[in-house]
Amino acid sequence: MPEFSHTDDEGKLRMVDVGSKKTQRRHAVASGRIIVGKEVASLIRKNKMKKGDVLTTARIAGLQAAKRTSELIPLCHPLPIEWVDVRTELGSDDVLVTAEALYTGKTGVEMEALTAVSVALLTVYDMCKSAKKEMVITDIRLISKEKTDV
Image (cartoon, rainbow, N blue to C red; front, side, top):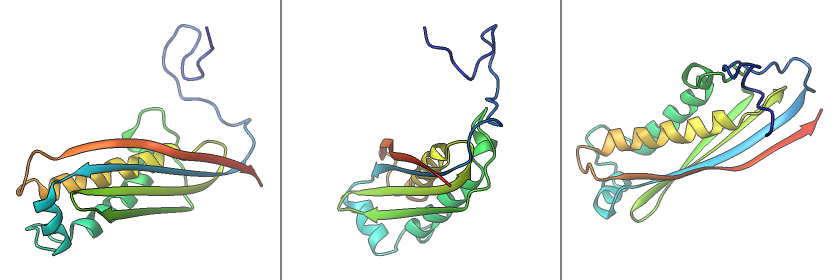
């Protein structure tokens, strides 16, 4: 059985000690989507949702979430993220969210990208739920994770 770095000898959770790891440039990309339906997509496109500009608000929420990932995910290291970007793409019946994060350090930045996507999608749901409650958040996934020596 493989040894898990997030548990001690007794199987209790612990934060991983990354102190001895090599500092590297870390980059992660994640994406996900919410199926909102054609009517809601049309309202978003025309900026007619009661709560305001859905796509801009979702982007901002995703950016904020990436910076606060360690407050939301247990055992996640707090990272001084160097750059994060959240992009939204409105389709005919859905919104695709893609987040990218960069950090130079000793642990990955994929949780920040995934958290940005998740919170941006939840924000779309929140802003559109008065028009339709049957939306589906789906396909949240890590697209890529890279590290290079500095």
